[in-house]
Length: 103
Image (cartoon, rainbow, N blue to C red):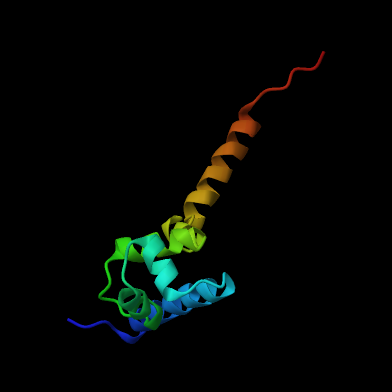
């Protein structure tokens, strides 16, 4: 089964980010490939956004280029607004039940 267009676009954008970061650091494909332990050809495939490259390679190159925030953001679980509301209500109920004695 092939990738849908959104998935292809994701890898293309990821490849462009890698390429942009590499160029901004004035690093060659050979140099970055050597640091990452991959060939220049594989790095070129990644920069073109080819999805067949192993995830570990994407992460290794991203780490070397300082782009781990991209991956870390993908791991953040979104907060369910209903859970957040229920938690807020529990805290308010607890505050309301607290007795304050007059002195």
